Image 1 (cartoon, helix red, strand yellow):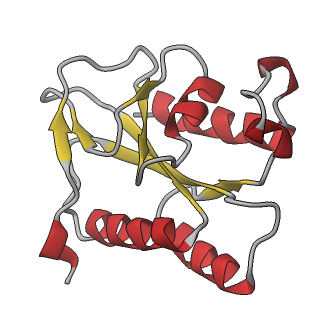
Image 2 (cartoon, helix red, strand yellow; image 1 turned 90 degrees about the horizontal axis):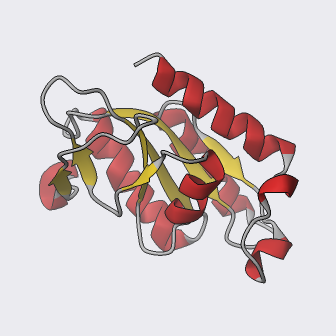
Length: 158
């Protein structure tokens, strides 16, 4: 049942400068890393769905990893979003961060299904160097630059 465990929500008082916030669907999802990659002014509101003050538009990017626990959380989130249970903010897209250098066929199928359930679904492939050091802003892969650009454009259209 979609409503058996409602997604947590949080009232926020200030909208980030970029009108974008990143939300992890579980601990360790990569939300703070993605927020940093997206540039200054992008917020990170933890794991709760942000509810901004009335009349203020806020775009949310939901982030999760590709392992089974994350896929379960993403399923629950996508179902509640589709059922209209997450309001106030606008879901700009979901980003899956690979949890390893290779993915199983089952992971790929689950990810493909989830990405079809939500707007602007995409994934960030495994970046081995990020296991040992934070991403170097001068060496961000082109795919990630395109993802962040598309999300900023979507927020500009709010």
